[in-house]
Image (cartoon, rainbow, N blue to C red):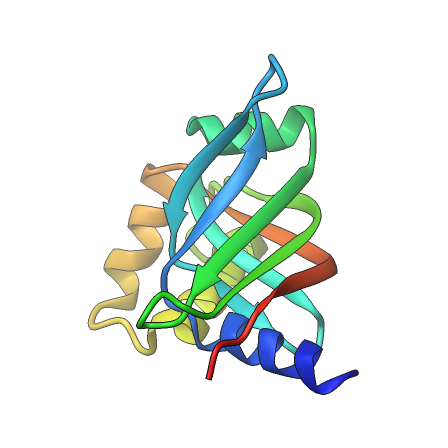
Length: 143
């Protein structure tokens, strides 16, 4: 990987807020603020949403997605494009779909104060995990 690519991926890995773009039925972009987690080793971005949100519906119809993040000052930015798959929703608080959401939460935010409550909420909210296999990253690093 080039230094520029490494820097952009560093920015993706550090970001705790991003904008996810999916494609509406009419072809226009649909943008949503999200809390991403970028797994550098797997080159995959994870985002949690609910099964009934527009972004999940869009991704079921057309799995192409892009996630854009910025540095704290807003001058540096990175966009990752790829194809998404959806995991869930789960019906068992200890099933694989909810376990994937637990892993996402730990990576994106740390330890939850009440994992039982979290697991129950993931089932009742019909949460899904968006998994974007990153195909291309571009952006600019301003120093």
